[in-house]
Length: 173
Image 1: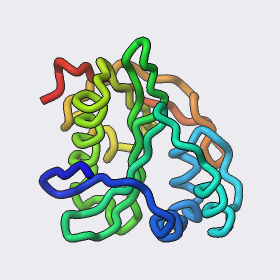
Image 2: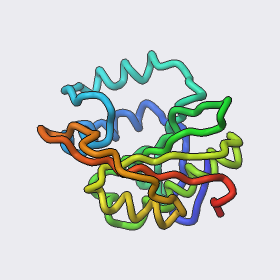
Image 3: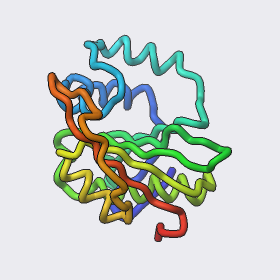
Image 4: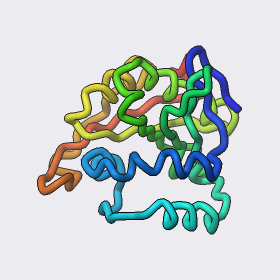
């Protein structure tokens, strides 16, 4: 378990899969947060996927909780390249957890895991250019905007720019 000032990251459980499945039903958010097309999925299908999923050290998922035990969402360090020592971060918070200042703490803990525990050198973070909250959170943690991928994401019937951020281990504090 990784503990910060306001949040903690822990392993994902079957109960989390059930509770967090309602994020999947938020089509707009899910479509903007994943690189695969949204398709309807039942809770039973999500549980089956969870139960048949092998551990993958290149893609590490976490459940995000408040220190009081409130389920807030999920986070991941994904695409870990052990040769080049880099990876990417991603978070998705439940609707009721958004706008409450949790995201910077979640990003900070994911960075701490990636840099201190996994020994990575560089982290990338990609988000829709329209996602002002994530951009502000990334910058608060120290990520630098490295560019914009024009019309890079297909989201709900339109192409959207994607903002690309990076953070080096030496820049993280």
